[in-house]
Image (cartoon, rainbow, N blue to C red; front, side, top):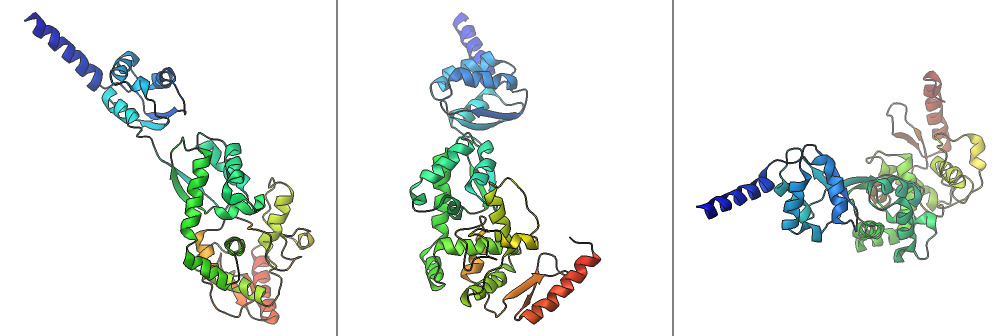
Length: 330
């Protein structure tokens, strides 16, 4: 009888340790790479009502001997069993990270570093030391990265982040797309460079093939690209991308930089931003037309009015200036 009572007592005690609700708050638990069990316990204290019961079960399950790093979601009113199952299986969160139309690897690293266990400096080093970076100017390395939303674990290393991005690059640049680039007599870097100009001239995906066709027309006839975004990039690059420039003035057009397409013919040395895949597709499958001029369309914000001759362009520009004056656009 006594043995039965003792057995029942310990069974009940084990049941309480496993299945009694123990978390009192919801939140994120961060477990750094190489963390010891004691560090995990300290991080868990604010979430748990009874740390000793968690500790007992954790040691029974030998969690203290195998710690998986990462960011874990803790829900209010979880049992020790549920929480430990999560930690023992390494069922950490995925973090959705948005890569935008950044102008440099430094800007990208600065945005991403705070979201992961690694830091921005390590991301930059991982990019510049990667095998694919050999032979490329640092500024041109942005052409290996595509804007999109990607899921990463918090403890993703800088090297694994870069490897994942290179896989996205390789996935996009199929043999078919490389052949399309070759037909344009362009390398993937040159396609990306033109696509970056298209991206900043028009974010409208349905207009981008038309914009790309216009710039390809200019390249074919030896006309300067005269793209305002290249002037902005050149000026920002000269100042370490520390200044925001929203508008180009006539005096800026003479700014001396190989990226300034008002001064130098052909494509700039590299991309002026990380273009979306839609802009890359627009260059590879551009609209076939004879336009070589365009100006913002006041009737359709975000779109442009196109012209084949300078006379048509002057007429279109007059319409835009009239609208700008009436709406006090400076």
